[in-house]
Length: 258
Length: 267
Image 1 (spheres, chains in turn green, red):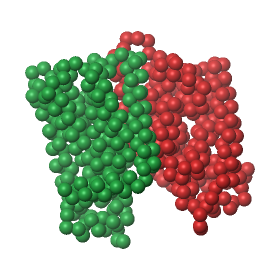
Image 2 (cartoon, rainbow over the protein chains, first blue to last red):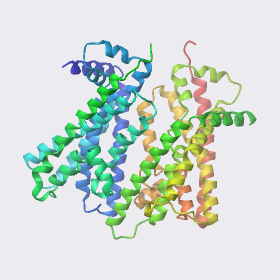
Image 3 (cartoon, chains in turn blue, red):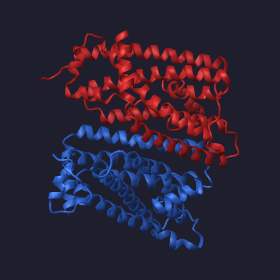
Image 4 (cartoon, helix red, strand yellow):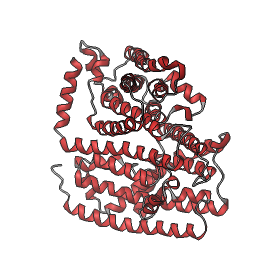
């Protein structure tokens, strides 16, 4: 509840700079657009990738990028959390009688990312209309995939934020996992070598919210359909260890003074 | 001229101090290069048609892009100057008895060169040592290597000339966040950093021939592997030189006009 109050406040302040918000949104839209255009041009030339058609890969792209865009909107507070530590502002957060994770989550909301979410949703609509055989459970799973993807990316941002309790040098590694992970997961994971697939399924569960349920959505699941349908739930569970890391970080926090 | 050179050297030395950041950059660049190679390998394996670029050429293209990322990325700008424009500190810059365009141009050259000198070697060494078909191929003979080196040096001049227009944009709009993002991704795409230009459809390649961007990041990397060679290579390097001259001239004019209109409030 408190979170929605935070969001309302941040939205109102963003709306004070309307032109800047719209330009930012348009910019974000085109970042995602060029990335998708490149994918289209590649399929235009090569036809398919490891047995996956353009429509199927577009679905994968849309789920991943929509989830990433939404998590960037929501998880902005953790993304720029290192500034809060450096400026000593985190002391104020600790003084308040509310959870730290919630407060940090509510400290930032990057509305400009709506542009890239919008682009992903357009691609999602197109991909859904190109692929046959939709049903109610499939639509439900699709929604669950995006939700699960948001959880995974926000989880990464939380761990990245927790890292800044200890160091400011390791942050590039977090970018590799978040931005790089988005790019990796824009294509069906089967095109990568086995060890990458394992890393992005079991350590950071990208596979749980796009590749594995996609096998079900595109009719590749065979007899294990139910198992693949449930994998997005594992993505949601990823938040639990991330929050534990966060708590561990908070306990080791030493103020820089202010 | 001596002043600009001294300034360039100063920025170069200052930039060389950020070694930790450079190592982090190397890891990122290596990751992206490796990922692109895996994606393109899957595409190459899925199609029996003749690919537009031989596999070893594409691999070199990608590794060179990553190794020289700090050189070719239009968005690598001088943050100090960029924030000086909206917050008014630029007034100090205006007091200097030098040509501001050349002054800033030299600064930016030094900044880019220091960033790329720190990052390019580790990426290249790793790329040359990789096992299997992700390993970077040697250059197309002595001739290919020299043309590559010449063209890359010109790239540095060209991309910095392009980047100067971002300062101009900042002068005009003061808060250019969105517009800048749009221009930077646009430039990224047009110079082949998102999708290698030889993999684009022919009609698009023909359009890009008439824009300055592909002479920054596409031309030198194709010279390296001999994808462009012979008289065609010399012709395109000529085009590169023309673009440098044209953009420097145009940038200088825009700078002069915009500086005539600058209003600094308070101070």
